[in-house]
Amino acid sequence: MKKLTLERSVEVEVNCSVTQVYDLWANLENVPRWMPLVKSVRRLLGDQGLYHWTFGLGFPLLTEWTSRITRRIPLRLIAWESVSGLANHGSAEFFPTDQGCRLLLTLAFDLPGGLVGMLLENIGLERWLEENLVESLNRFQAQIEAEVLRQA
Image (cartoon, rainbow, N blue to C red; front, side, top):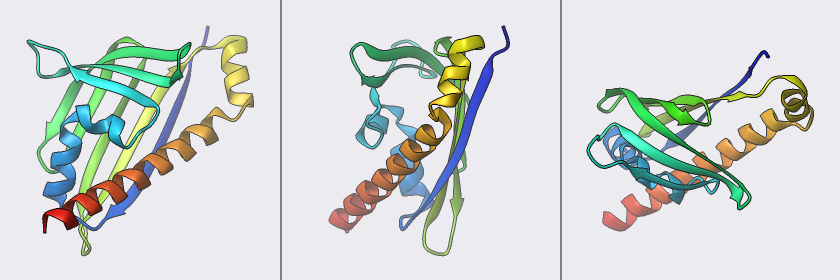
């Protein structure tokens, strides 16, 4: 059966330095703070590159996976891919701007083929994913800007 890959990229301008944005994002255990659908992320002991994710609306609509960092360029890029569970990959890219930092987040999920994949396409999963990513990055922007302002 042919698999469908759902991929979306969204970006946000943040009025904080690339260092501040990268440092907060680099600890993936922070992600649930601004992405409500990510219920938990925890680094697995013994290997700093492996993380266990729990994602979804809540029981019974939860899925899990383990991902590994595939590429890390300090202050520029963090990329990952799943090694078990829900097949996915993505990246967070950090670009300096006159106002601070532009964060570009790309996520891709492999969806099942056949009728289930067609159903997911027909219910507007792509639009839903993009809307959730935009909301999450806006939440990230508000949180980090507020934290940096408090520390100033």
